[in-house]
Length: 258
Image (cartoon, rainbow, N blue to C red; front, side, top):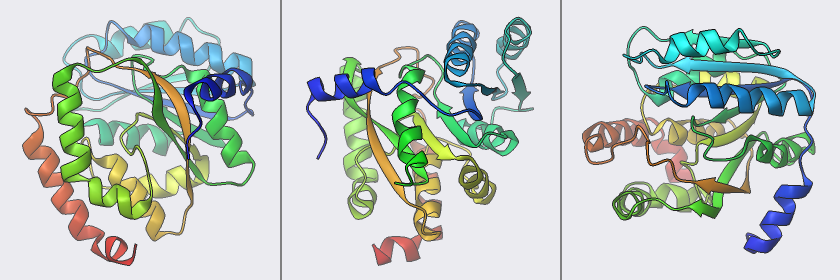
């Protein structure tokens, strides 16, 4: 059972250390207004926790996102690579590209826009370091800025109608939070097996982990909705449904055995 909000806040404040060798992967698409802040926050976190690397993955943005990221990366004292995908393929493809190029002992995938303060990854890193799991998912339990009514409705429909049975079978609370920590070798092994390029890549990685006997923990994070999100649920519903059909067919054995 999750802790009460006051307890969550105290946990988040206390656990702010992390080991060296952390790769921070941030997928971006048309994020020219946010990417510099993403890089600065990641660099600050890594400098405080012992070092690592930043991987910004541009998913074929038509604007100057990649160019701005490259220029800003040259000004910070933390190793930072900007990877450019030739075409816009989807968030899953961008995260996969970054993780496969990562070198860290631990890997953090975080959405652009700093919806979750990066320091809160320390709690997930601790779970992995203590041997509790190989993957630690942030779950949005302390909402600082809620979604709009439209997005809350779309999220409820997605979570209850489309993946509710999957979450229930796997015993997970929040599969879609864009804040996840991995054991580095585990992340690279799972993402090398993945194929989903779009929004539901999280579900595929979870099912790959279950199939391979890899443990998953959840930890609470404070989260602020980004009103400038690149996800447009109704516009992308057909693609999301196609991905879920592929996933359910590919992992029918896993879902039957849960």
